[in-house]
Image (tube, rainbow over all chains, first blue to last red):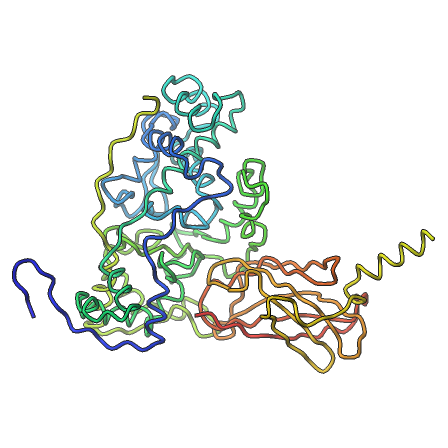
Length: 380
Length: 137
């Protein structure tokens, strides 16, 4: 039934079993409570968020003075660059992930080589293939730029000191505090989920029937929700999606396997001296994570909020559209995945209408986002 | 006298000699058993969530009253034949209980947790494995 005057079109509400309602309910509620990271003493602090916002677009953090975090994570492009493969000083092997809801992750980077958002934030600054900066240069900037030094003092309660590495980490902690504020708005899916849980049939009817069918595939036949679990649509861990390992002839991306090795070797992980969590409670994952053979070629399960707006897809940007992604999971080779048991990823063999329904559902995870307000002055 | 005090401390701190209550408090403990062993366990936090680390508080008992110890804990998803991404640690507490830290179920579904136990202090003693299924939705 099509209603005039801009009112929402009423759709048929499908029947949902109690088991299905429980599975859908697990993807909410949204938005989540604000996140706070015990390892970052300025997490959630307004002055640190302001400093992080300024540093995010600060090209002087890079060695050549031409690249900032915002060069790849662009505010107007859902905090990514839209390229298949990220472009630092050279082209990289993985794509730039969106930063939406990044503060709610437990592992960072496609390989999870960082266990905190601040650890992840300093990685591209130091990477010679990306921003090619240094602790000394960042520290000098914070000490000598009057505006940034003032912002630092307001955020951290002291003037920038002589310890370059500490200042680099503090800059990353301010960057993390800013990125933790990037939370997506409610979506059509969230309104449907809440109506379904409340038994509000009129509310359910505002959600397209195709999306309802696609959601049933997502939590059922497709087995998507095993990994894309919870309100973020990610279980926060890693999986092998059947994408080719090879990045060039004779060279592979080891994914999570290499990420764990880099995590353990880094002085910036949650077990190191820069963590502000004296209890160590937030370092449980870091303390217990263990590399296993199957981690080879696994990559982080991305959240799916804003997924229709943040292509291309997969860790290497090898699939251009959502339709391509659904086709990939519909036709993926079981031989490539080497599973001994019931494989988590298996060829779904979806029909064209089923594929279209699944894409229709995924697009209801998108929301229009408010324009980013101008950065507040550091020291008014 | 000093020797007697030292011995008493050993007796009190050893899991094997402690009382072996199968009620771990909060009224929600799980008890599993074999012909020889009885294990009581309680998750901490009580509600296990997908993707969230948790611990197990445990008592290890034998039906004959002989001392026993918890050697190792691990978990797998039998359907998918994969384990956890984390290696849990087992620590004996001074109260006679064990604490298993670093467990994390990263998917909904059925997880089989395996508990390896053996007679106390017998490094080469026969290990028996007891299991319990947790189903996460």
